[in-house]
Image 1: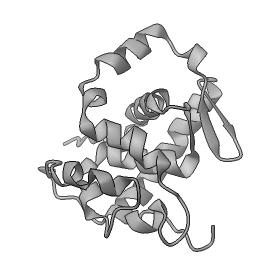
Image 2 (image 1 turned 90 degrees about the vertical axis):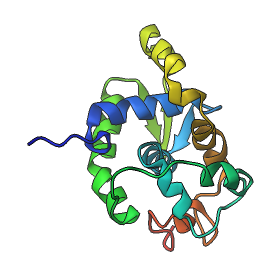
Image 3 (image 1 turned 90 degrees about the horizontal axis):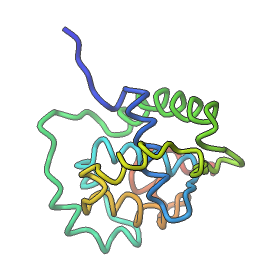
Image 4 (image 1 turned 180 degrees about the horizontal axis):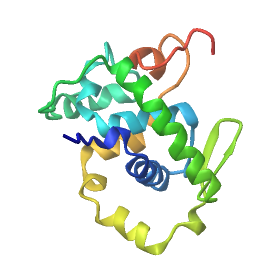
Length: 164
C-alpha cells in the first residue's frame, strides 16, 4: 500500500514555497520563516498548539481556534517538522537551480518575473489563497520576530532558538 502525504512531496512543497513567496508583500522571507510557514501550510491545525501567540499573531487567535482539526492523528510537531526538513531543502535547492528563487544570507527571494503565467493563475485560483488561514500565514507570520524567547521558533517549538 502506498501512502501519500503532501508534507513529503517535493513538488507540492515547491508549489507551496512559490505560492507563499508570491503572496508575501516583499516576495522574500528568511529561510527558517519560510520553512515554518510551509509547515503550517500543511498542518494548519497545529497553529492551535502554540503555548501563546506572539504579536501580531495573537490578534488572529479567534481565527486560529476556528481552524478545523485534522482527521489524521499527527505526532509531535517538532518531529514532524524535522521529518519535513529534507523535503524543504530539496525543494528550495531545486527552485534555486531553476532560477525561480535566489538565496542570499538565508533570505529566500522569489524571482517573480521568471514565474510562468500559468502558475500565477494557479495561485490566483487556489481556494486556500482566499482563506483566512492563508492570510495568517503570509501576512501575520512574516511579521513575527523569529529568534529569541518570544520569537516564533520558541513559541512554535519547531526549531532551536537559543543559539541564534
